[in-house]
Structure formats: structure tokens, C-alpha cells
Image (cartoon, rainbow, N blue to C red; front, side, top):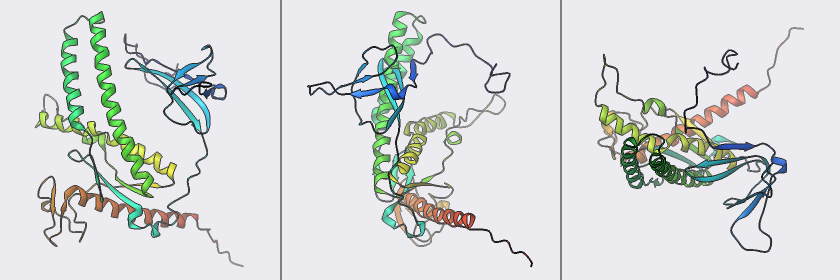
Length: 326
């Protein structure tokens, strides 16, 4: 019905063993969290679920703020999680009332890379890629082992469970790094300037077709893997909603020539970047780390864009005066 009405694609059969183990309870007004009475244990009770009796025993890692709207129970890699979506009033003050008066230390430019995961105009943050690569290698070994087993046998399911745990650990390591870094930047800066990267195009396969095969396919495949390992899209989403939470703003700038332009004089030339890590302006002689120089350019472009957006907004909000002849 949804397909013929134009609301969905043609229905496909669900593959065996590929279902999502999750259920959502929309009865948020009935759900409550309470600590065990007269004890100092580090767990709480989540009650109010239909047909679940007295409730669930949970390890609460965050204080619940606002009114609970929904609760989602999910099983992932053999572990159970409860996600509570809450509605609350954002009391954060607007830190960007006048973009023209934003001070230099109140804004930060962020350059996303592979050698340096996140580089700002002041400091650097590195994802533990060595640990991730080790886990990825273990996954590839387990996948080869699983391919030799009979599908859906007990040993096949056992290996699949190990692989799911490895993938879950990779996701947790990445999310931990991105959450901590984005929170630090958004808490301490009113304006966070990021490049508007087209990650889907950057990580597109270069395999090509039989008629037009691609070049350097193995090298491009490794580069795509490194780009996706960093989680640039997740970092951007985290910065966007956390800036709103703390009263700041995220500004996206075009990424063209941010790594080739000189942050001191503005001279743009491909030869300015001598290597992956070194930048030397051929016009004024300014020398800087290449990622740090790109972060400074992103910051300058972001502040310019913020001022232009504010001026355009003021022109649209201004009252229109219509002159009429008497």
C-alpha cells in the first residue's frame, strides 16, 4: 500500500538473522526512574513499562533532565540499552547576539584530517587509530573464519557474536572521542567554524567499471577507509546540537583552498603546502603547520560568513515602506 501510494520503495523480504532487536514505548508520562531505597548501589529502577511488571534494573550514567517522552530498549552486540528521549527548555543564553563583536578567543576554526583527527587554531586532538586498526584486523580474521562455517550453524552464530562485539567496541571508542572533543569545543567557544565537507563524494569508490576501470584503486580504498574511520559526519552533527544547547552557533564554510591559502597574507597557491604537515607561503614567507594554518583560514571565513548572514537577516527583518501618491 505504501509503495503504490508513493510513500516507500517496493517491499523487500527480511533476511534471516538481520532483524533489529529494538522496541519503543511512547508512554513517556508513565515511565519513571527511582534509586533503590536505603542503599548505595550504583543502579536504578526504570518502571512504568506496559507488561514489564515492576520495571527494569539499569545502570544510570546520566541525570535525567526534563519530561520523559519515549523510551527505547535496544539489544546490540549482546548488551541491552535503554534510551530515554526527554523534552526540556533550553535555558542557555544566546552567546552570538552581535556577530561583529565576537572576539577572537570566542571562536574556533576546526580542520578535520586523518593524520591529525581534529586540529584547531589552538590545539590538536587525536583519535586512537592504532587500537581501531588492531580491532579491524581481528574482525577480518574472524570474518574469514566465519566464511568457512556452515551458515546459521552454532559455530557460525558464535563467531558472528564475536564480530558484533568488536564492531561495537570500535563504535564506542570513536563516539567517546568525538563526544568529549565536541563538548569541549562547544562549551568553551561561542562560534565553531567547520568545513562543509561532502564526505559521501570524498569516500566514493574509484573501482570504476569494466569499460572504464579506475586507477590506484587499492590506495583510494585505504584512503576511504581512513576517512570513514574518523567519523567526520558524526562530529559535525554533535557540534551542531551541542552548540545550540550551550547557546553557541556552528558556521559551515566552503572547503576550497583552505589548506592552500596563507592565513597571514591570503596568498593562495598549491606550492605553498610543501608536504602533508608543512606550510610555507611563497609570497610572505609565513611558516606554520599545514593543519593549523587551514584551521585559521576556516575560522576567518566562518566569522566573515557569520557577519554576512547577520546583515542579510537584518535586511529581511526590516519593515518595508511603501510610498503612495496623495
